Image 1: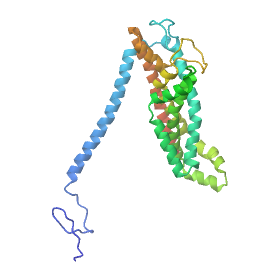
Image 2 (image 1 turned 90 degrees about the vertical axis):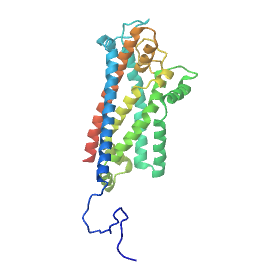
Image 3 (image 1 turned 60 degrees about the vertical axis):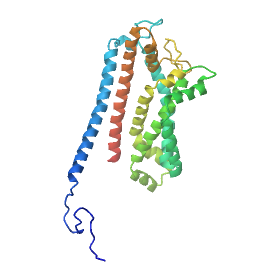
Image 4 (image 1 turned 45 degrees about the vertical axis):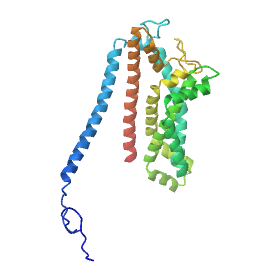
Amino acid sequence: MSAVEFDFDDDARPFDPTAPLVASGNLRRRKLVSAVVERGATAAAVLAVAVLVIVVWSVFKNGASALSWDFLTKNPPAFGGSNGGIATAIVGTALIVGIATAMAMPLGILIALFVTEFAPARIGGVVRLALDLINGLPSIVIGLFAFGLLVSGHHQSAFAASVALAIIELPLIARGTQEVLLLVPNTLREAADALGVSKRRSVLGVILPAAMGGILTSTVLAVARAAGETAPLIMTCSIVNNELHLNPFQTVASIPVTIFQLSEQPDPSGYARAWGAGFVLLSFILIVSLAGRTALARSRSKLTK
């Protein structure tokens, strides 16, 4: 048996490990495929940005006639009509989302700390899988759950809506916090262990402060997601009046439900007000999302230095 090895290509030349590297005949095809994939990815990114621009422009164009300072600061009309604003809906949305965030943020941070700092790998994997499954639940199912838990046999309320939105926010905050905690350098943990600091004090005094920027960013992104949900609010907090109050155990107006109700009315003037309310909600979500991603980028750059 000869010691010379052969490469069974078209030319069947003997393999020489000391020979200089030479481009194969497939180089041109690989370059062509690479260029096609690169241009396809670029076109997909441009298409995504174009869709966002078209949606924002369409909402603004259709709601421009309703947008004004009074539209943002006045209450809706008592008996219908084209006058009035969405002040109660703005306040109600802030109340519902604020309570939801107050419930979801501490629980999400604790779950993330348990998975990354305390739990064995097998248990941590189960918790992460459960969070991913919750994140994949349709919002209408979460609204139905909150309806059966807090509304059926009782009455609609802002608190019930907040519970539904808190379930939506929880996996987003927990998973985002996990990713940020994993970016905290292990040298900080090792330094705390070398100084004899307990695990609890190490987490509270070293790890959490280092990751706080990313945790807040994850929370902001979760708020942006929850603020635009409509189905849970329709099932838990849609029978409202035009009074402005801050009682979470009564129903309050909200921007998503207001958009839905205005779009269902036969009055054509309601359509413009629905588009205007949609633009207000869309602007809030865009601003919060951009601010959150900017803060997350800054937090990651600080953690990786």
